[in-house]
Length: 89
Image 1: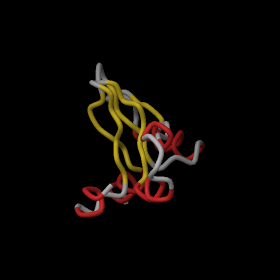
Image 2: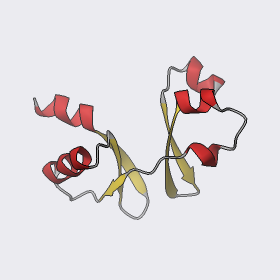
Image 3: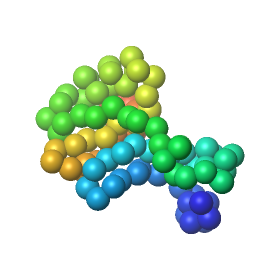
C-alpha cells in the first residue's frame, strides 16, 4: 500500500503468473488492510486485441465498468473508458 501511495497509484492489476485475476483499488485496501489481497480483487471485462473499440465502450457502458483487460494468450493491456473517450474526442 505504501508503494502505491508513494507513486500515486490508485489502481493495481492483480496477476498470478501470467493469468489476469482482476484489479484492486487503493482506497479499498486502506479501509480493510487486515485482510488478504484476494478479498479486494474486482473482476473486469475481457477483450481480444481485434475486438472493436465501439464494442468495448458499449459493453463497458452497459456493465458500468471503467476498466477492462485485453488478453491474447496472456494479458497484454488495459482499457480505461475515460482514456478511450478522450482520444476519440
